[in-house]
Length: 336
Image 1 (cartoon, rainbow, N blue to C red):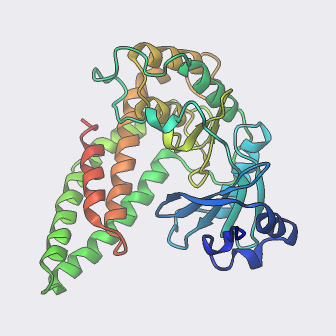
Image 2 (cartoon, rainbow, N blue to C red):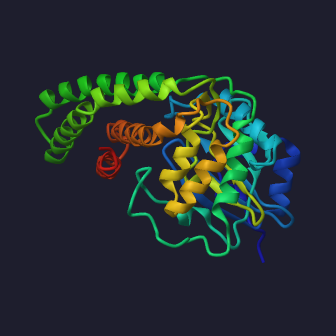
């Protein structure tokens, strides 16, 4: 039987960049390679070995929002408290990351993904987590994350929104010019028209967004470590506890952000939301006592951030815009 050749399934230049000891182990011990994900900013490969499996992440160049040094240092902070996969090696240019593979044998946490407003009456009536206690596990992740040293990157909610506003304004001008110049493809013309229509829908929320952001800034005593993308897609359950992945958006930011991100993207019951919120905020020192008054506002801002991101992605000429138009409409529907 011929020996499995892992290099034919992995990026062409990875073997050259890997340290010899790691390349030799893959060469001798790998019995399978599987694509885990193929996203806009990175690809992930599962490398199956006889004793311990690895994940190779390949970062793309078209992710200008990601500061790789901050991403890696944030990953290291979370790894140090055993809430992230071990980062085994990274290339000097930070294009390649090699990390521990976390098997999810019994509970695939991404199955619990959803989109809700904070106080949403469409939540499940009964727990969908079987024998697991999602409040305990989510609290067991959120609380230690909130106590980590601050990442290098620091950004307020208002500053982050302004980044989106400025980027969309530039894209809007470019798309307006393209609409005038475009005389050919009907599908492309329709995509340009649709983008402009959705952009106008988003800008109609700007005045209300400014009010929500101002309210949210009033309840911050000090910023804290924020992952800023804690949807179920970025959480892994190893059989004992939750670990998180994908640290591209990590920053020192608003202490309500991660809590609300978890609440609005998980299939939690109203009672589970209540328990998680109360227990998380019980010993929270970075927020004023009236912070619970602004949970719904944080959820509105979260989904407007998501809608802005989707519209930015829809303008990327390398992508199919319709899937991002659909996401935009879904996210915006969650904002009053």
